[in-house]
Length: 403
Image 1 (cartoon, rainbow, N blue to C red):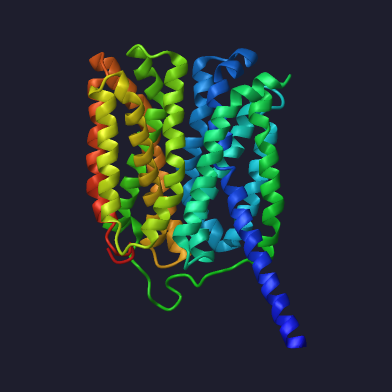
Image 2: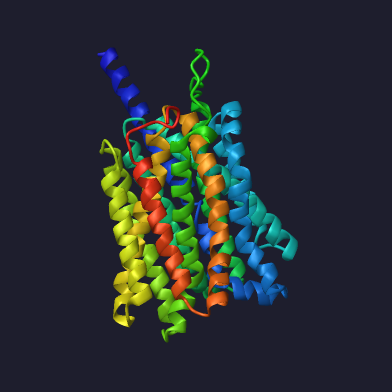
């Protein structure tokens, strides 16, 4: 009888620990996009209230991307030394401090808070795919889907709720960007139990067998370029799609909703694609679907009339979800252990976000040089062909330590 009771208690503890772990991942993920997307809609209010220039306010949205590029390579080293659970706990502490600082005070605290926020998100971006691989080796696709949809759903909601929150509060834009500190603090509390269950994997090389450097791996570079170009496409469209549509006669409000349509059409597929990808021996068909949908969507924007805008942006949103889901899964599927996954994630995100940061200004420069949207959009279509080429290589059932 006592043995049965003990087994029930052990099962209950195990189930409770699993639920807390999943909740920790969900709450942590909700903090990786929303603090960024909440800023865009209230940029003009921040600029006017603080009396700063357009150039100064522009750097506010660039800081997180630069933090992603600069700090990503350090994440695996920190994880090896202190354990992923502890590093992610510290990330949430730093993130919470940054989100509390942003709305209080003036220009200095806004930027200091943004730097801390960007640093925290940069480290978490790298480690979360590896953490999921470590904790859910048999359910990587499902948990990557849960992680992705939690991140992107709150990101989309933050963009949509930013103006209403500002309008409803006497604090204005400060409430819009400050409210997300509450979610970070909740995530911090939910994550505390993970510190007691730190898991250190045996690192490659301890038994005298060490894989090749990722920087010399052709497969790692294919995944890195895939990650970078899909990020570039997304950030270019976020920055320029409303401008393109307004230049063709669409009202600003309607053009903004078209951007929202991209984000919301992504949501179901950010959950579904990782699950499907995880069950396939290789992901070549998913890469082809990504290419066809993205090319069709961009072509619709480029050549189609007003009636084709909505179906085109939906196709782009679905394609972007496929690309992002595949990129996240490649970090896990093409590596043999969680620390190798962290190394690959760091490499791909560091280079990828540098590439993404260059996209919007390059797109704008092409418009200035050609005085039209044709050549800039052709550049994006060309990028989808490169995504196809490197994606087909990344989708093969191989490991970065071997190829």
